[in-house]
Length: 192
Image 1 (cartoon, rainbow, N blue to C red):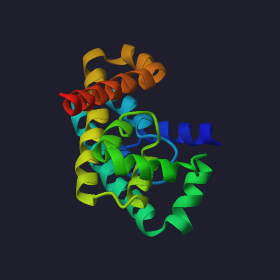
Image 2 (spheres, one colour):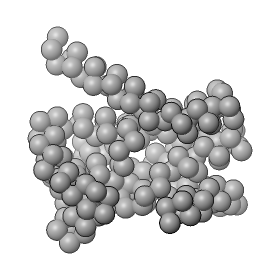
Image 3 (tube, rainbow, N blue to C red):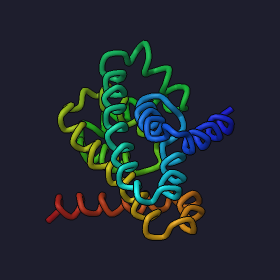
Image 4 (cartoon, helix red, strand yellow):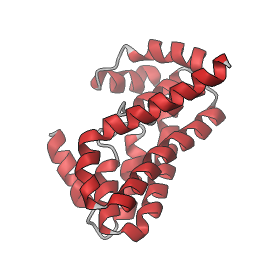
């Protein structure tokens, strides 16, 4: 079923209203949808390089707005809605870990997790369930999601179609390296 959903998302990338679909997928992925917007962003940027920055902006804004829905689910509806969503993704035990992480690391959790392949919905729902500062949540979500989508658009603009296979196979590596760099920066600032 997940493969069929992925194929449907790829077809939407060629739709005449692809920008609206991209916004919808980006919004939904931040709170409940299983397929990341990268599945649409990559072919759309390759087909229309002149719109790559626009598409990255659409992904970023819609993802942050969708993150607000995820935050609200975690904050207001954890017992009724968020707990089953986390369980469906195999992360039912993640709430306690997120509460501990948010209490100790706060914004760093959002910045790092928003870049990695960990579903962003886990971060948004966890932030709401942990009652993390909503304004700081918005700021860090915008930074991390913007970094992810604009990095992807920049790579596609710079290297074009040949980078597509590399990104699809090694996106985890790329985002993990970026997350390690951020962690290193936080540790350097903390211990200097």
